[in-house]
Each structure stands twice: as C-alpha cells, then as structure tokens.
View 1 (tube, helix red, strand yellow):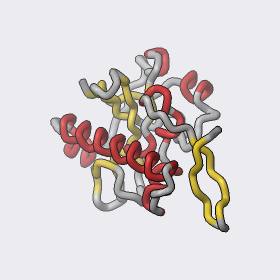
View 2 (cartoon, one colour):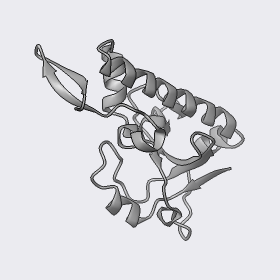
View 3 (tube, one colour):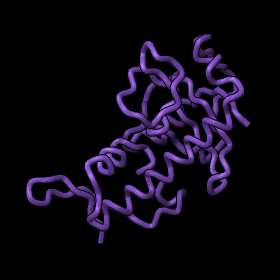
Length: 166
C-alpha cells in the first residue's frame, strides 16, 4: 500500500533529537508498507538532491523521493489523517503506479546502508560508505533494522572513521 502523507507535529517533537531527519512541517512523505522486518517507512519528497539515493520525480530541480532521509513510523499517531498533501503534477505522473519500483530501490538502499556500516566498522570502508552512512537517517534505527553495529565517529590519523562502540 502506498500513501502520500504528512507527519504530525508529534512526530517532529518526538523525533527532534534524531540525526539527519528533515524537520519541516508539512513536507509530504510518501509512505510504504515495506516487508522489511515488518516496518512502515515514510520517505520524503525533496528537491535539490545532491546524491544518487533517491527515486527521481523531476529532472529540472533534481527532485525525488529521498531514500537517505527515510524514517520508520513506529506509531500511527505520527500520520496526519486530517491534512492531505498535494504534489506537483509532474511528480505525481512519475509516482503513480510505481510503488513496486520505488520499494525495490528503497530496499536496495537499505541493503547498501547495512553493507556500508559493516565495511566501516570492520575497517574496510570507503569514503562512499562513510558518506552514505553519515548522512542517512537510518543511523537512528539500527535496533529496528536489526543492525548489530552501533558505532561512533572518531578521528584516526586526521581522518574521520567509524568505530564500534564498546
């Protein structure tokens, strides 16, 4: 099931301390019920995206559904059932009927994230792994995603790296 939703102000209050989450009331999120650990994800529509981890909805402004800023919805109270978002017509055309493609891309993104975390904490990480993890909201949801690594960033020989937390 695919819905385009707003998140409630309770969401923004309760999640305000989470890293990399887009705090912008009335930003439309597209919500998927993804069969990934039985978790519901909300993935935001964004513009001026400067990476490749998104489903493109517009060429002119690098707009799309940004996988790197996805959040897990742990309670339906965070879904605004009163206000209904409206998206641009050009974006709607690229999203309608594409739920399966978007879900597939999103699950591939989660898999890349998990591999990158493993690479980083095992000392095999590349700069690409580092940036994928550092700017992803998934770093807030390791428990829910059953990712065994909890990490911290440290300086090592004048370079920022991830290390396992003791």
